Length: 577
Image 1 (cartoon, rainbow, N blue to C red):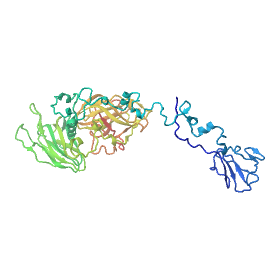
Image 2: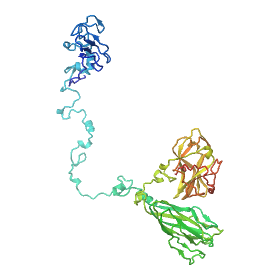
Image 3: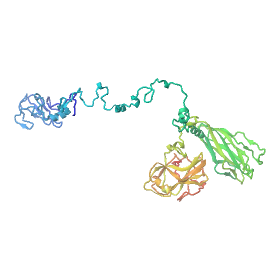
Image 4: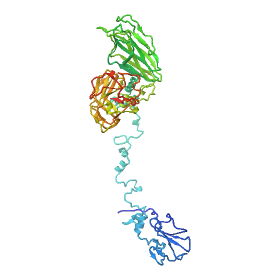
């Protein structure tokens, strides 16, 4: 049986139609559809409007006789003498008590009344139950104290109670212990359970449980501290022949940040004729202060383990020192000089660089041997946060983005290098990449800024050359990667290689046809100054060769040029992985 409870009155329905009066014609906002309106501005010339239909009153009709109650010429299409009645006007008669409604059912619906509106209160079918009817099905009665629940176990589950809820307080199995149970306060020697707290145990302790750093934190701090040290190892021999003009060494240099202090030590293995000897100098950024000591033998050192003096007096930076050189033999590897120094930079960052030459011009070369090193340690200034030293440097490093090196923060890459097939096709562009530590080079990242979907590309490659111009790694043809997706992309080298610290050149070779300036690449910034202070073979952005369809195994970097380099744009951005 369906029971309905009626506990409140229904909502008021819409008003009925009315006959309205006023001085002047009715406005559109006067009355509702179905209303009539009498303009009584002139009591002797009444005008009636209506009924109002679709929000409009229509034209008024004069009522003959004026002053009340005569006949009108036409009302609701009736002519002649027409007596106005409630029925004629579509109104309800008050005395009828709504019995004159066209449809009582429609009226109840318009009032929003439900089916219960026509039912009487009762206890049988077809009636509505009273609000206090005690027989309402499914109601738990207060007087029953939950004894009338259908399933007590289900009720406990719905309340989130555990099985302890049905147990009594006690000291045996199947009971719950009281909060003041004396067994909780007894002092007892714990059973041995070390193994359960060991790594992999059932109750293993974490580093945080004993106030220790998380696994790897110490390694991270050590790695951060190691970032304060730059160690450069010379990868190949370098020679000076018949020259006394000092020039930059191709490998032994290191970056110095602004407003920082460094100490540095070099170990230089020199091999050459005593008659030539050598001259060395060190240069630092503009405004830097400090000094350096040669820690090397004097000129004319010819007797191994002899009595030659060691030069230890401190020099100004950019001042040179002549040092003795000894030729290698069956028992000798040459001679070692161990210059060392301190340098404090100003607001200008830059490089600490070794410059050297023969002291006396000689046709027999003096060689600075592979394996010679330069180690630079930062002792004040900003540093990686994990090192705990001056935590002010917010600059991102390649490792922050899972890279090993880059030509610059990719967030700073803005300009594009514009390319034309006639201008660069078959020619090799080179961008210098400086590595400060040894890595395994597997991938090259680049930024594809613009795509020409109508291009025809073939024999397009990226490769890596060392500072001697030897091809160390090359990709497969990347033409398909250049045809879609203007975004950062990585391409793998066919064979990864171990790259020792030093200068490298990432080479790009493009071949095919495309619309000028449609195939473009992201750059590391404005390129007008990229080669300032540099010349071949150490240009940071250059081009060379023509009509190439593959990257050659070697390049003569002394032939670097800038004939096709648009100096209004920067060199291509590259990342290493």
